[in-house]
Image 1 (cartoon, helix red, strand yellow):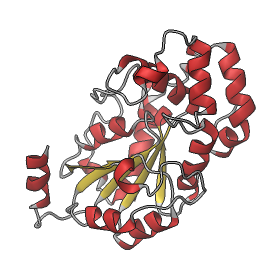
Image 2 (cartoon, one colour; image 1 turned 90 degrees about the vertical axis):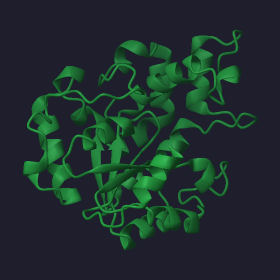
Image 3 (cartoon, helix red, strand yellow; image 1 turned 30 degrees about the vertical axis):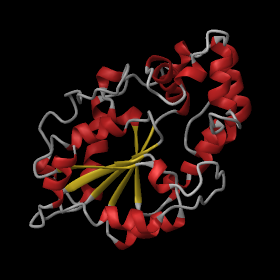
Image 4 (tube, one colour; image 1 turned 120 degrees about the vertical axis):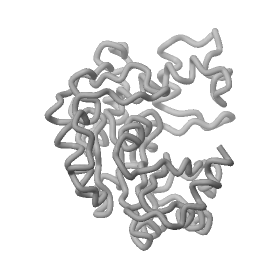
Length: 266
């Protein structure tokens, strides 16, 4: 990885728009970057802005969390023309200003938070090296108790941010004038429960926002499923079958208005 990053940084001659793909974790960042990799002229910079390196305080629940802006600015300047990078960072005015000044084409991948919840549940439970695994997978916990931790959070160690606070911190990206919000449900295509027409339209918008000529898009961009190692099922709306009724009710009780704010109905 380090060798590739050094190689990518050294390509000063590259031209084209620099692209950021940002999202809530498990919302589809890798789905979009896998598709970008198929577009002629685009290259993965392999830069991912880690929350642990960027956030000043992981416990900050404010609507405009403090970030290490000098570190962001330095990292962004290493991305060359026609390269893309990624992050799972909440909105902050300072971060947005850096992206504006650097003329970064910013995409925010948004997925139904209830599908994100189901995906996150299985991801933590199945990945033993995850920082939450031991705490989360405690055999004494029921399925509902584990879901409740993800929804209501945990103030102690390990810290888990309540779902509604996490959504509230990311929601301003949907409203930002520098961001194109791309919904997972449109990216997934017919094979994932969406439609090829929606996926085709989504990539037309992506091309315009990134300044990419439409003829550079692969002919099968709407039909071919992107290959990504982190996509568990790749289906939209699966939460209706996966989440127990009591979990669905708790999500609605705690996050209902925020779900509506970002465009998801009950």
